[in-house]
Amino acid sequence: DIQMTQSPSSLSASVGDRVTITCRASQSISTYLNWYQQEPGKAPNLLIYAASSLQSGVPSRFSGSGYGTDFTLTISSLQPEDFATYYCQQSFTTPRTFGPGTKVDVK
Amino acid sequence: QVQLVQSGAEVKKPGASVKVSCKASGYTFTTYYIHWVRQAPGQGLEWMGIINPSGESTSHAQKFQGRVTMTRDTSTSTVYMELSSLRSEDTAVYYCARESPQNRGYSLHYWGQGTLVTVSS
Image (cartoon, rainbow over all chains, first blue to last red; front, side, top):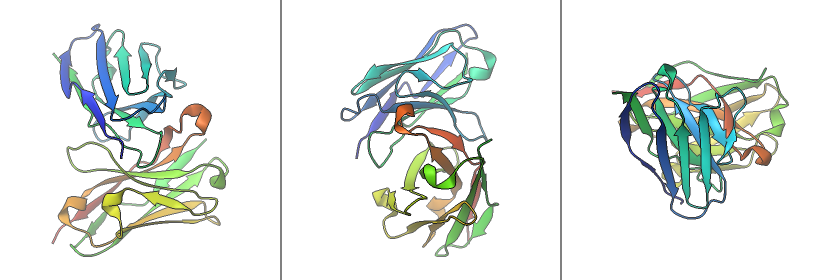
């Protein structure tokens, strides 16, 4: 199975901050990497697919990059509605493993 | 619009089985694979398995081997996930999600609202 790791596991930030979350796969997954945002009590929401493509309706302050094993999600200017948990997921092969998540909270 | 509507919350005793449904609408049911993902209280997302609604082929995570069964009913556009031999660690919210095609990275765009399954004696 492909193992996914994320760092940091949590971070504290302020509105307007630039936030970067890293995701690493245990083997190459090309660009089969997706990012989800989840608020408490809600289903996950797709932000980025195929490593760098912005899902329709998602604000442009979110961006993704990477290839192979190392990927990054960046929020260019954190907004109040962005305080949530973020998960990466590989869609290269089954089992379609998720990263453990990164919780972004208020500094 | 695409919708995935799941069945309601369940309370089960250890050793019992639970069957969660996911009714799809707003698209051609047999075109897109459906995934099952669960989330234990305070924990992360855990991928459980996938079903092809067209041919009913399935694949699941090894940890659920022998305990999970995924089926579909094309007449009602509904996918089912049954988990047997329940234990307390299976207490979680269970989600179904629709897979997007390859040009969208096989991502999970549409999600059901989640079904809370509580396993308690």
